Image 1 (cartoon, rainbow, N blue to C red):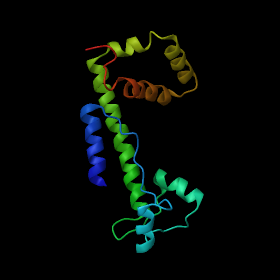
Image 2: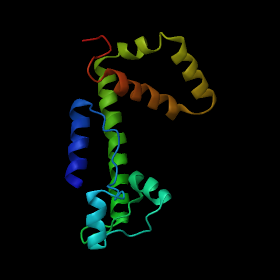
Image 3: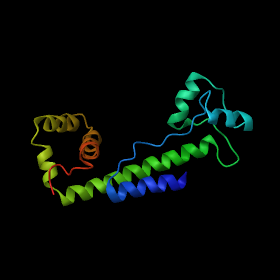
Length: 147
């Protein structure tokens, strides 16, 4: 699991590849994972719709000899922190290499309005995330028409 996280962060830092998120394995009824977990007594909580829904989001419901749901929460928290740092560094490097991106982005009245609303509501983090995430969502393959 740690190697997968390290690999995802490395790809993000080097190439700007945005890992959507990390999810925990969930023993859905009828799957091979469910059968294995039942046989080995790995399921650590009741199988209910609520538990299954939250299990994929980091709550986890599998406890083995190697890890617990708490271990998975720590790994997921570590991934999300490292992801934010990697995303910010890659985005800043992109903006330094292509400062015109920022100006092209704000020729659009929508983005200027969003900036004003964010600043007025003291939501600068929302605005900054939008600038960076826009870069990730729309410009991974093409560099905003710039080279």
